[in-house]
Length: 246
Image (tube, rainbow, N blue to C red; front, side):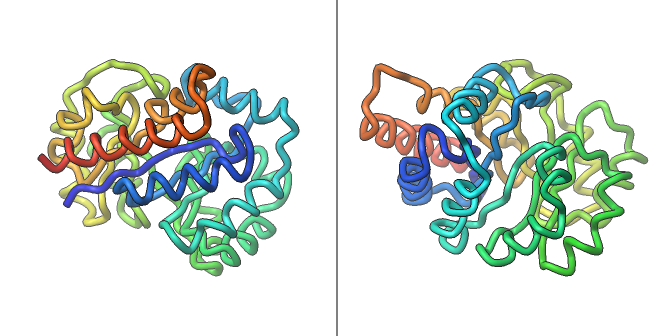
């Protein structure tokens, strides 16, 4: 069974709604959760997730919101904190790791923390039982992939193309997937540009898909009520889960 990983922005539009969305996603078949930490300059994310980040920050997001949501859902669904390195560094990696362990968080997804730098923090993360998700891309050489994935934990994030999340670009990932599979038995999930139309094709040869913009755009739709947003996002998740396992 291929897995579905869902990204949503923590606290968008508020804490309780985020918790309700997580429960709906889990019931719709989502296997893992990326709980996004709002940041003012999310360089790897496209305009949809960037807008959700900015709206959440403007509404007064506090890190306690992330912790409250995590306390409510972290032990119900396999949850990773996804964020840029600045907030982690500012608050302190040990501070975050203590909190993560308390709430049952599985690990971190930090797209602007290069592999070479991340290894300095691995002993600390391991001390708290946390994984650091490794990134690979079709632009990586087989040697580079071997280095990055040799000690991969949790899952490996395959960036479908060189760009930002939410785009509809398409690249042949066959060689990259083969290189990863030759070097690691850690589950490989593909992200960037995954939606109801592309999910089946994107899931070819990998263990699952990561969906962000296709969910967050529902939460940004001001024409929908809160209950309609939850129903729509749950239906979209169920459709994607069915597509990747068809």
